[in-house]
Amino acid sequence: MSLPLVIRGGTVFDGTGKKPVAADVAVAEGRIVAIGRVAERGLEEIDATGLYVAPGFIDIHSHSDYTLLLDPRAVSAIKQGVTLEVIGNCGFGCAPLRDPVLAKTAIYGFDGSLPLTWRGVGEYLERLERAKPAVNVAMLVPNGQLRLSAIGIEDRAATPAELDRMSGLLADGLAEGAHGYSTGLEYAAERAATETEVTQLCRVAAKAGALYATHTRDRDHKAVEAIEEAVRTAEHAGVRLQVSHLLPRVTAGGILERSIATVADARARGLDAAFDMHTRLYGTTFLNTVLPPWATRDGRDALLKHLDSTESRARMKTYPSIVAGGGWDRIVLLDNPAVPEFSRRTIGDIGRELGRDPHDVAFDVLQREIDHLHRPMVIILCYDEDSQAKIFLHPLCMPGSDATTLAPDGPLAGSTFHGAYSWASWFWRFMVKQRRALTEEEAIHRLTGLPASVMKLADRGVLREGAAADIAVFDPERFAERATTFEPNQLAQGMVHVVVNGSVTLRDGEFSGLRSGAVLRRQSPPRYF
Image 1 (tube, rainbow, N blue to C red):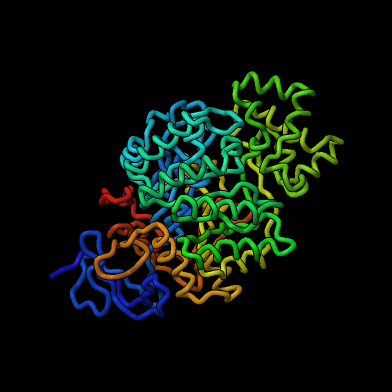
Image 2 (cartoon, rainbow, N blue to C red):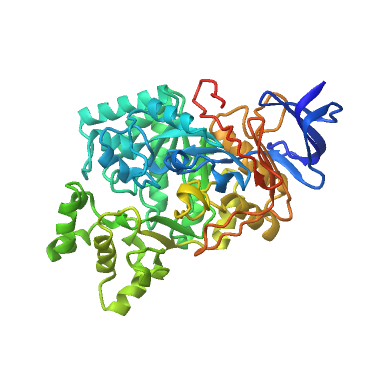
């Protein structure tokens, strides 16, 4: 008898945090059929001598909703051993949508090259299936799109009728296969959402047995209060809670420790709660988040008039945005073709050079990019390695990319999203090899079994007989990121083989051309390609 695939002689980690064992792994029909000494020959054999064999890594916090449609190869992810991405985070995502013009403001990576022809979650997931992604995908329903569909760009709480409509859209999305509901309460489309409003929507998620993932309301000076709100919401609604990128942007005065304790204490009280963190030493977002909703709701020409108006600029400066909240000397403008002379510099420094208010510098850049408002990106210098290590040490914490999948060639070659090429490899290099803060088996658990348990995916994130054959085979000494802050589009090194649903997607470090990912619908069997 011949097996389709046998991985021989590797050091096998099962994803649960247990010590590894020397074993072979046999695969048939997209599933693991044996772990141990496998006598049968494989139609394809992979020699894993000297390599680690682990479950495929799970990106609990991805923004690849749109980029997987543009380039489903998921090159940046596969080269890090990622076999599953959870999309729809931070209230951003591709469905549901009612007005495509408004919807694009809450989609990371949107460039207009692919029209938004779908409307509901089910239609979007079908479109994603037709794209044949190389990775498995699970979706959250994004609150930003719920609000844009029901309210539009309005800086106010939802009316009862609007909230009913949002609740219906969320219930539909969950019934059509989404695994949960997400918010991005610092962003313009959602800032006015009240705790009561979010709690009602969380009750819809709870009724469906789904997850609530939240980018909390204020991650600067009121970070603890924002996390406390998230916990209250989850407890009142009876919903599972995932706090996104928990590390506050201000950590002085014990804020970091209090933030962690808020989630840990809720867990001790019985709330099913955990959290994640990205692996950058900075946040990243659109520069256009500095604009208040009232300035953008009437379209391009109206916004241009506001940017031309001294009076409107003065009013816009009072808007408490995610960008301006912590000071302009920590906001770095990334490479931008409209203002190449300002690239890679802080907006505070640019303002001093020009003798201009930094707020006006930001408005000036957006004015020049009026037809490409999603192009200017910034990083927010706000973290340090000691804080990162402290948060990743906590057993409730798992890493995530907080990025979109990319590729150095093809339709996304000119795109950048920090973390895309480096998140899992950075985590391994930093926490295991450099800091020696986590054991190898614990680090692999954080990348596999822990996020799978949060998502309630029983057959993912583990290596055991009967589980889906998502497997990462890597060199533990070489696995590391090559990306840097200003040269982020560099593929990670050290990942040797990647298997997705039984198909070898990466072989000897080279892409096979196979795309065997599945759209994982909640409470329904995945569809394989």
